[in-house]
Structure formats: C-alpha cells, structure tokens
Image (cartoon, rainbow, N blue to C red):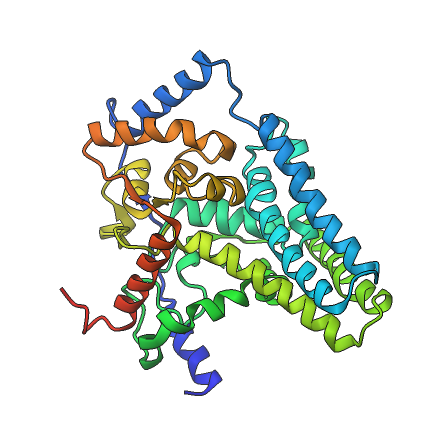
Length: 378
C-alpha cells in the first residue's frame, strides 16, 4: 500500500461525530463522595495539594541531570562512547522533565500560582514540545474523552498502529505488537519536528474544536522551537569535535530513549487489558457521569514500585491523575486507597496491574488482539 493510499484511508476513517456528553451527577454520586473524601484528607493532614519539598528536590535533581549531561557532551572532555552514553542519559532526563515537571505545571498542579505554573511549564517547550498544543490535546481532549474512538487522539497516533476496536484492520496490524516499540522510539522526534506544527493549526483536535489560533501562541511556537533547535542541533554541530553525522546519531539516540520512555508510560495506562473503548450512544451520549467513565477507561500499574513512582511523574497512578489532575503527583500514593475504597462502595472497577513489566506484557497482548481481531474474537 502506497503512502498516499495510507493517508487517504486514514482520512476516511475520521468520520464526523457529534459532541460527547456524559450522564448527570446524582446527589449521592461516586464523584461527589470521592471529591469530599480526598478534600478531607488534605484538610485533616494540613497538606497542600501542590508540590512539596520532595517534588522541589526531584525537580532540582532532574534539571541538574538534564543540564549536566548536556554540558558534559559539549565539553569535548569525554570520548565518543562516553558521549553516546551521556546522550542516552540526557534523553531519559528529558523524558523525566516532560513526565514530572512539565506535565504537572501545565495541569496547574505544581503550584497554586498559575502564573508560576506557566513559567515552570516553559521547560516543556525547552525540551522541544509545545505547551499550548499539549494543554488542548492532553488536558482537554484526552482527559475528557479518554479512550473514546475518534475523540481521544492518544489512541489514534499513526494508522499502522490499531489501538482501538473501531479502527479499520490492515494486514500489517498483525505484527504491530512486534514493531510498536520501534515506532514508540520515534515518538518525540515526530513531536518536535512534525506533530506540534500539524496539531497547532488543526481546527479539530479529537473532540475539541477551535475557530482561531492565538497570534501570541503562534509566535511562542516558532520562538521556542528555534531555541530548541539551536540548543540541541546548531550548538552541538558547532562546538562538538566530531563529524556531523556522529552528532546526529547522538541526537537521534537521545530521542529514541525519550520517545520510548514517554510513549510506553502513557500507553500502559489506557491501551491495556481491562480498559474499555466506549462509543457514544444516541446524540453522542455516554450514559454515566464523567468520573464513573474514567474508572472503565483508565488503569494504574506498578503502584507499589517506588522507582516507577519516583521516575515517571506518578503516571502509573493514572486513575488518580485523571480524577485529580490539579493535585501534584507526589500525593497520588496516599489518595489511591481512598479512590479504590470509594470505587468499591459504588460498584465501580478499579483497574490495576501489579508490575511494570506485567503491564507491558498486557499492552502487547492488547495490540495482538486489536491487530488480529478474528483470531482473538471471544
């Protein structure tokens, strides 16, 4: 199948749809009860919902690792193999900036001061992404329309990955559980060079429509992209005493680590066994309140693994994050038992996978099933 044919086929799958609405909250509802209990937890313990000393320390360590690896690479004091290792480490620290610092700041959960959140969120731009596009595609679209086909763009990344059951099946999807991780490696490269530009100037982003594109944000898009390209391509090519192609190898290698890390963490929360991919009913209606809906479409993983908790911005507590995006992720381990208990009382699922690698295996099994639905039909 030619590239043009793939493009045309993918466009045809983007069918018109009605705006999605959710069921109304009842006086005694899961969402209201849960919000009350979590608020009581913070009030009784005198704890802010925003960043604490642990989060500030983590921020300093991540930024120090990111800047330190960058400066060491530019120093020409390390041999080429050492520089490649540093590039891989730099890619991982870059992913940690996105998952820990930028993610919380753009959600407005790092601090109560929203102006300060915006300034902290600039780190998201300095690592090559765009905070304005992310605030729409992630904060609004993904968090509102989680796992809804043709509304949540996180499950419609590239057409050769079939991540939901309504997408048309291609022959190549039979092998997607094999090649998916290679594609994930290219996720951040695509993000900084292609995806942000395309999404910025799309009127329709999943289930969200924009009439205009703010001039200020257009300027910011190109300004910060230019800074990123200068810092991580132009300056290394000028300063580092290696052939240009070896510098590009290091740049791409860093992005492979960054892209794989970020893609896997986000995939394990939604495209995993147990999660649902609900289609709206008549007039775009989901027949349950939004918070109840989140319990069917979102999963936690490896919540007892302290290393995973620390490195990946609490995104393994994805249920808690979707329900409380304005709460800094360092608090999720404490509020998770409250969420689980309340869900049980309201007969709602609480989806979780015990280990990190078990969740990866579950993701692979889901891709196998979606890639060959006839074989795995129940």
